[in-house]
Image (tube, rainbow, N blue to C red; front, side):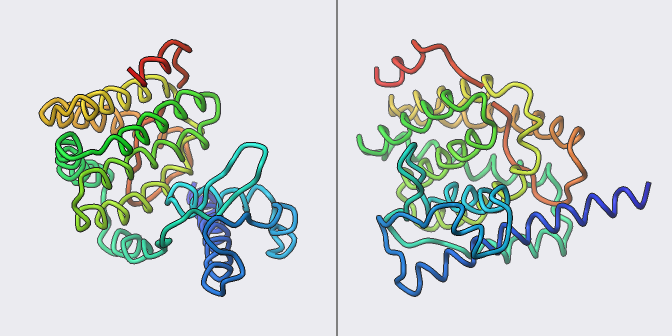
Length: 265
């Protein structure tokens, strides 16, 4: 049993190292000016060859950066560097989590306190452009119900968009740190998600409350979403290999075509 746990831990550790290898390589491309905001990254096969890793490992690193808003994937066109300054400093939070043994329940409690208030502020302050961004991410979640990893990217982007819409840069910075760790942890269990559609519907309720500029409803919807996310994450983790540390968010699935139409109403 101990041998199996050790092997699983080593596998997770190796996965994280390869992800961060991709992150560091792309960070160097950006900092050196070799690629700039709006530029397309080299083809996957070329990057994988340069880094001497599999394309699957490369996609994991690209997915991490996409969830953080550093990269954007365009269907049929490739992966591009997003405009705006990238952020790569979530490692200190991961170290603290390992050192002090942050528990999943503690992470959800912290997220509930922070994100329910962010949702409330976003309902008061969100611009039309920010509300449109939230609608687009919800629509993308419904479109990705059969692809859990793609779903997770839009799930994370949705929460980042709420943090920006709250118009408090300090709270947004705190959320960036939490979200970076969330994506890294959740990406290891998301394939075990059972009901992504329920999660999608909860995100849509949060969006509708913000669109209606109803702070109290936005707060309640976020709290309910995180309660369900905690339960779903516990279920995912039971199926997955043991993962120590911070928990992520709830599993999710596709809405009927008419649901997308509701987003713009």
